[in-house]
Image (cartoon, rainbow, N blue to C red; front, side, top):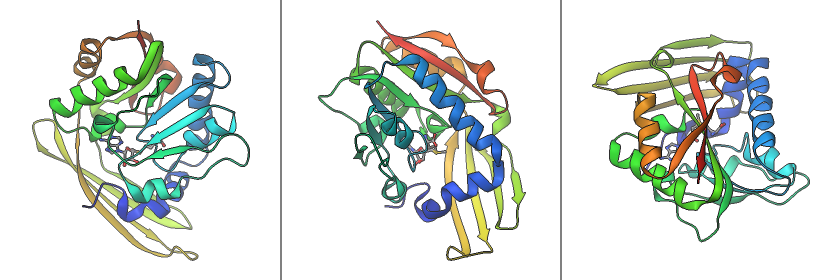
Length: 237
Ligand SMILES: C[S@@+](CC[C@H](N)C(=O)[O-])C[C@H]1O[C@@H](n2cnc3c(N)ncnc32)[C@H](O)[C@@H]1O
């Protein structure tokens, strides 16, 4: 079965770096800084929807024990261990299917992961799994993209052109289409993908989390201006 991102995993990082330039690096640094403020050295961190390890790899490099949970095997294949620090443990599954006897100090569900959950059963299950794998006192860093983020985008650089279309399908469901043409180097070619996303009202996501025992501790949206998403730290009592 093909998962979102499978067809363009090898150019995923390149596509975002090229489209967003320095802002993408800034966003990564900002997220790592927030994580650093939430955990002590050597923490246990689970990264839901870890992608190619944008956050998981540097967090392991900083000495944390990181489990990367990612349903796209192609994305997970691109995830690299840091040169120093513990290797990242990879688990190829969706957030809502994750279970582990391990308990974590922090769970990450960031950079639009929540919008890949298409119905309330998946949302509820994802929040329940996140809550279940946290230690008491553990936290979840979560972003919820706003309606304005569901829009068409185009970008063109010397290296590639990228076209994203986001079309309302029905209700809160959107059809997302990706077309990237890489003009240079060994990765030259055309990459396409299409999948569905859901625009969740923030309150609905926070209510689902609350039912699982995760309460909002901090609203960090102001630190992530420009992402088109609200960012929250949720706390497990
Ligand atoms: C835009 S990427 C973000 C990757 C990473 N979190 C980051 O910050 O760079 C979204 C990721 O969520 C993954 N994903 C999709 N559905 C998911 C699910 N049900 N559970 C966990 N991850 C999912 C996708 O495969 C993709 O790698």
